[in-house]
Image (tube, rainbow over all chains, first blue to last red):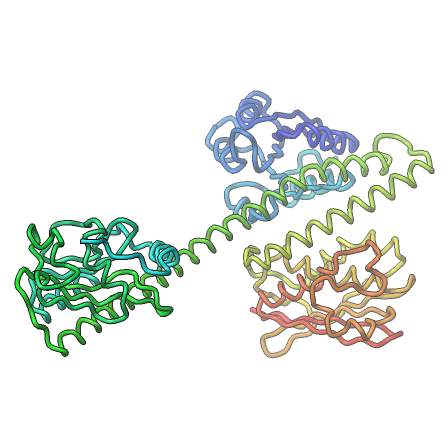
Length: 130
Length: 402
């Protein structure tokens, strides 16, 4: 089981993603609704993967990523952005800051688990691959 | 002394004076120069650029006088703006109108006054360029002509200044509108995409059977909802892309890309759509070609051309994607065996809101190909097509290779 922390302020989207990943039986998902909760959760839970919204009420996604990287406890947890801000987000710039990749909203529940596992595999993270 | 009567067009005159937005502005060199020359030419201690406002005359430029403004009812200039000609008062003590003007007996003890009206192109007199002395003068016609020229020069300065201000305001306005458009497009994009994520995701979760078996009649309804939610997403994407292109705000992040890999990925993206329509897509031609492009945008071009081909092809047919290179350019073509593009829309096929025969009934915005063309052109490429009624269409575009 891949332990995922999803940092996302929209409760509806949290639910959709939890159900989407839950259906594949390969993921266990915890959620955090703000950047601060996300940082605290990441340090406490030490998840295998963090899925990160680009824009949260208290912090921007890239700032959260920087804070995760700065903390020894969370520095090596892989991060994938999930964002609706297709106009402003340059995927390559996110990757340059240390994210593995960017998944665009709306994501497909049928495909999102495969997408995440594909991204992890491409980066040599074999966690969660049965 | 009676105050000067008001000009017949006083209301219009005042409105125009205000429109120049010159009143109560700081001194400016151009006008200061004019009064220095006027004082020199007419050999007077005082020279002014005076603007006759409601109840006062205000000096844009002045030499030999401390006051910034004086009451209009005593102003010689209030008289000067009543005529097209230069008002010349050689000795005010001897002048029928001005003999009892209080300014004769107290500072500046006016004896000589000459004022040339500042006349707009349509004849409104905003004020004067005037000279004053406490000694009588008998100016020569040449001096008066020069004063008139100086007043024309001051008027030109006023016009230039107004035009410059207007241009500056236009630039500011343009910037404000652009900033609004950027904020509008990105807000709409984010705000619509967020609920659509829940709608599309929710429908797919249920209809995909991921939460349990779906009864057939329920599945039918869910499929309709799912298809229409997907359509809504495409419409929003295309409208936002068009708005961003129109506003010159579509971001391009070009990087060296493997063209063949992009094509393969696009074919993979559309695999389930093709399967649904029982259409095969095959690729032929050169490989190992690198282009400098924005991956997401070029994928959008490929997806659009391939899915158009699929949409307009009969079930069981084949879409062929070809790649050739020549002289530093790669050409990608997408050929279908559909019905061809109707003659009536061929000339406008890359225009906005143009729909093919099978579309137009709630299947698209008719913006896809106009976006595709703009993206190809932003990459320094060209796009074109050949089509034949009944036998198919071949779209092709070029990209500079690395």
